[in-house]
Image (cartoon, rainbow, N blue to C red):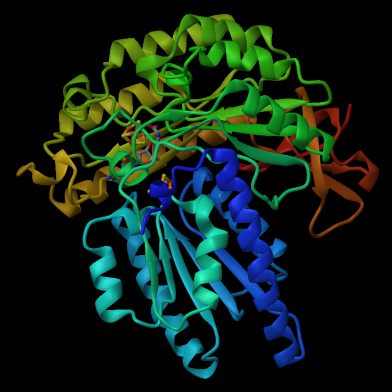
Length: 474
Ligand code: SAH
Ligand code: SF4
Ligand code: F3S
């Protein structure tokens, strides 16, 4: 089934996909005539920014085929782009599929598609084949560039179309993408992950790390800027190891320096930075590059060096705190955010206290906190010292309280300051206000007009409301 056999170059592959879009367009048009209306679609995204960006690719292709996007799932074509990082992500999808089945009973011509990380997990395809026959199209993370062809196949048959690959080393550029936001965009700089943190399923479902060529990244960003984008978020599971395997290796720090030169681009963000590969040169590059936001998302996962070792994270508490110190020395106002897992197998109260200590010491601007979720196939899933759920829950609540108090305090400390804000939209509730973002990603509402959208202004943060500010032009 794999079209590897065709041995096409990425350029030929992209051309072939455009041909499928044309062919699908004809089928969509015929169906439109039959129904006397446009065909609609909805792409529902679960999971991280990578998935959000992938969904924009799906939306681009469906739009190109003549489908019209609608907000809810009462559509002719529904795609769930799934996540499987934690068990509850999986459960959400199974639940929503049940609901869609009922809707499809009343609308039999409807097409249901599933893709994303969950499709790469062992057992899922078998389950779908056996008990979810009403799902029409199933594909994975490695062949998303073949979406046009798969849709065409789906429109031409009544059978379930399944195409999930284990690996792929080809990066196909230049397919249609429809952005969710006019002024900002995610940009993949790499795919996959080689780190195999012992709790994490991502390397198994996203495959090995592959970096995009700098020239392709820069060309994409230049195109985005020409189309009105002023902020990009560079995406990778570990951006700090960007470029190592390119024919002409390039560091992430130097990639930032190159992107910083792009005229018309105003802000550069990136995620995620793995502490083990964070270089001093990156910190310097962040300082040098005026467009790079003063924000570092630096997942801690645990504050206990003992647990970090079993997590296979390749840094300890001291190294982590050392990076934080260097960041703050070099970029004094930098915002630091993190991810923390509570209840990793064998975590003791002492280990947890270490995490709390780091949280208190670093004083994160915000932190995503997760309860450890056992993922079949990862090394941690076979450890026999899982922490009892009530103990985990109690620790989680203590951590959350600490994190929230610190975030509120940090936000409060910004009151009265004047900071650069990128205006993103008119305020949802009051159109005499505009809504913008600080470099640390927090939101501020202030008096303004529509023409300010997409520009950066100095804004005085008058009042902190916890997760957002009220302010005024300075
Ligand atoms: N590549 C990024 C993270 C991707 S997953 C990094 O290395 O930081 C996003 C977050 O989900 C992780 O940072 C981790 O905190 C959390 N996570 C991953 N696997 C998990 C699991 N099995 N249980 C709970 N949280 C998990
Ligand atoms: Fe998962 Fe670790 Fe890779 Fe992040 S770096 S995606 S946590 S394996
Ligand atoms: Fe989820 Fe896949 Fe992202 S598992 S977190 S959508 S890489």
